[in-house]
Amino acid sequence: MNDAPFWKTKSLTEMTGEEWESLCDGCGLCCLNKLEDWDTGEVVFTSVRCVLLDGESCRCSDYENRRATVPDCIQLDLKKVHEIGWLPPTCAYALVRDGKDLYWWHYLVSGDIETVHEAGISARGRTVSEAHVDVDDFEDYVVDWPLTVGEKAGEK
Image (tube, rainbow, N blue to C red; front, side, top):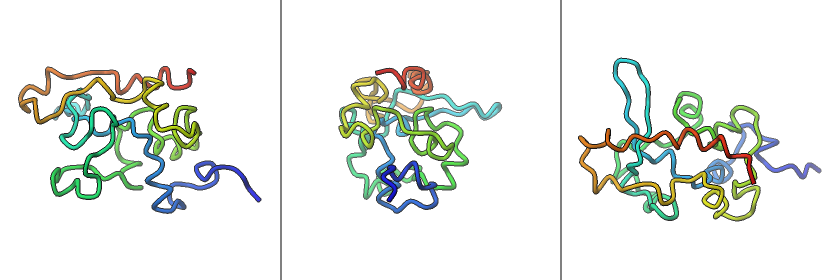
């Protein structure tokens, strides 16, 4: 009998729906608005979060119906995990895709959904809702921390 956790023994394609959903660590980084330079294709993060992202829990406040409120919400699936270049360096989907283990602060490892926040990986306390920012002002909110959180990801 293999006692290894599912993310070490299964590929993303082999996971059940429940296993797939459980990979989300609740960091909230993928739900930050991003800006893309049309000429270069460069994507930058902003600290402006989706209107449905709870700024404290870093979870979607209406996950099941999110596409009704936010039609351009990107539902991460197997294809998109391989196509999207802006996934945060700590994203469990990207880590498993690349054959890497989850970090110590991922709740599937730690057993506590708060460790992603305690480790300073999540968006908690660093964002503003898009309901309070005019889209023309998003450039004023460009940040680099979503792409640098991985630099301290392994630290306890």
